[in-house]
Image 1: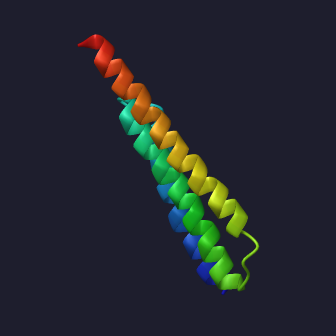
Image 2: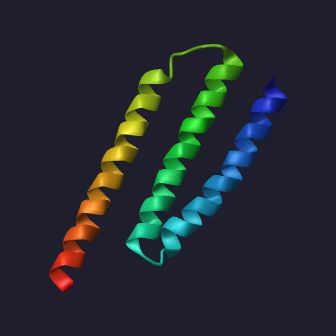
Length: 89
């Protein structure tokens, strides 16, 4: 099972590096927000895979907190962009 975990981490590490590139480069705040959601989802997938491989559920509270941060972050960015669009038009 260690080989499987190494493979999973390697694939998600490559995906995380590409996602960080999108967060840094942009070009818009919405691109960055989507990329940060993708990065949070990648972290959740790695934690879920680790739980499944090792047969425990100790990381469920961490998964819930990460999911809540992702949802509230997306809502905050959407509200910010909506307000900015209303003031410019």
